[in-house]
Image 1 (cartoon, rainbow, N blue to C red):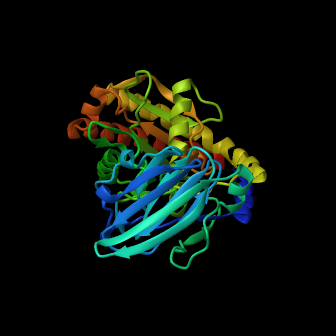
Image 2 (image 1 turned 45 degrees about the vertical axis):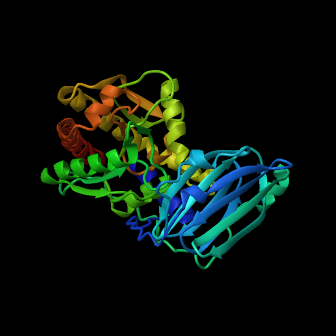
Length: 408
């Protein structure tokens, strides 16, 4: 089995270069949006006019993406504070997201109900700052798709370090500290679930830091996919884990369901089919993050690579399953606040690394008042972190013993 895994990963290395971007992201607020002067309105013929008022001019660009149709605006150092998506609703415009996107840049992504072409786009300076005016006119799907795509730009082509996929990492055998990659879900332009003043991205970053402290005190080596309120694409999170030589990948979430009732912790492993309808809905919500951030995901899949990765998972997936079972058992003993189905399976993109045992933990649901209270309680989070630490330690011992048997 190990030889199959190594051969698959070697083949993948020949197919791909995986990005491992730095995620430190601090805005210096060079410009601020002026909410009172920012508007959107429908125009005759089914178009839209969008006006964004800023307190000073900054470098910017605009483009469209297809599948689904989206309008994307990038600005250098723009603070969106005070601007609500509801204030710029107009016929033809769908969901709107705004926030930090990458170091030094902010982004607005507007879902389009139908294809709308950029008829005109201009920034004009005023005594009070600057105004960006966009005119969008209806177009046919074929024309929209032909013109969609992020344009090359010296200002925005910020290169990220790229590493070839390294040789298959030696499986941990207990002769060194366990390397753990913690993945606080969402961040930056993607805040995740929001309820009663709580943001999933903030809560999970706080919990990831607390969990990291617990794991480090037990002798483990811990890395985080993000250390601040920064956006990290889903597959880049896997690349960061691989670059760190992680033995295990744990993604942390606390979602919300618009319909139905759900509460308690759930631990997920990867599966092509979801274990229930709620799990499928959560996977769809998580995987929409890259779309909402305005990433171009066209030509994203590779059939050969998928087959090779599936072969590599023949060894990794059972290890992921055992880790998930251990975490559920430990959380049950420590906090007791488990979902009625605490072990789930779903097609989460963030769990697709073929060479690293990976699990996704939904600590609770922000849509449930009792879960919100627990998630905001440092004492409850400490018990949850300690339980996950115990589960990891137990799993690592068994996994190391199995690795020795496989080697023999």
